[in-house]
Length: 612
Image (cartoon, one colour):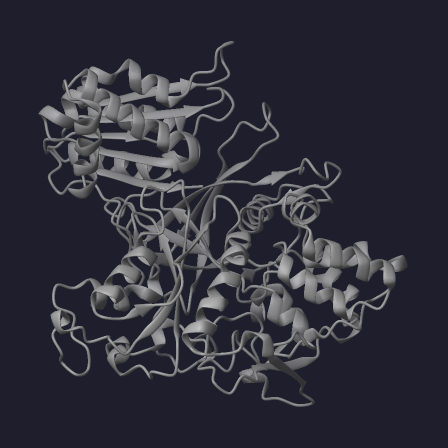
């Protein structure tokens, strides 16, 4: 049985059957936080006195009947690497449960899949030993379908999904639904503009504003907004054609799990058409896993195609170069093994549905202030597009950011290159686009975070946000300037911002000039332009130059310290720099300095909003 932890009453873990094993796959995000669907379980397991169904105190080991396996998913560039998986493991053991095998740990900064594959063989051996299963009796056989696809001859048109994300979106009873991660709000875009000087660079960064009036959605400065992208029409057409269902793209189908133990019969909204499923629900843009390619080889009829897929599925290095590093999608991979573009209709569609992940929303740090514009959410999106080193003749586009870019171009009547991705801007049932007003909507929801300004505005704040890492700090500075303009006292507000060149990619330059003028002597904008001189200068360097003053604000005046942006290099360097300040300005040894920085984090005075 595969279930979402959110759908389980985890207080019943003390009743777990002795002849079963529980597998916990637990991801960590942010500052060691659980994913949204694991919050309730996390609060139960980490509470001071967890209460399970039988009421047995934790010191009497209420989970003694539970045998479990755990695999943690995270990213090593974050300080709290796999914190959730590790904590769940420790707590289950503390409460009497028995872990089978070693805890698995996946690193998204490397390859989660390879970490999993390297762990699972020993794990299965340990499980078989613990459960007294003869592993030699298990033999590889034909792939067993996990889904059943049924083409429907007739269906109530009001119950067909055309890209909506929940049944609530189909209701027309006049009752305002609740908008959240399960049912995003189709928000009108009320403003958009390019932030880079496109006369100086071919890169793009888009500022976009979403109206949430009347939706019931609320946000606080520092929160995230999730934007739900759609797949580009070129990718949808490619995959439909190579699978031999282009002519049936508007056929209505039902897709349901045939696993009798699953709690979720449908993994995305159905009934829907093939085109709708590939456009909105399945991530056809991402590379598929090496395991999936190995199984895919068994369905290909040509010897050449079978040999290539078998090699990619078994050879880690070949997979890395040709698929992973090249960001080769399923459609592109199948095209590469298809003679003359002939459809590969021997591949079961049920298997395609099984191996493709679901389209996930992309999260952006909100760049507006809820005190200034409570009904408008601002996003600052740097557009991802690049030519992979292994396939330099191809251009790879970010799924969500290029959707944002093309919507921006359409709203501003900007001609975009023919090779750029194009989208069905009208959306499901034409709900996204009003041609008369040229108004486009995007589905979104709000995710609340702990990345917040101090409640006492008199306290100093120091912010480090190069590039689009400045997004939440735009909201912070707007809010501090608003408080100052209202005649209240505001502590010193210091922002370190970096980019390549001031006349190329200085985000919100004019706006920041005005905001810091409002803050007056209590505001300081410190910039680093990495490519305006022969020796590159980054925000880390400027941080060192202003070290003694920063130390005074944080240590002597009780200031708060914030970092947003790249976790792998910038955030790590800034963390190191702060520790060095504790040594040079605070007279601490290395161990004391490290503990001092950790103490700032634990007290919420050192906050990060970073990504890999």
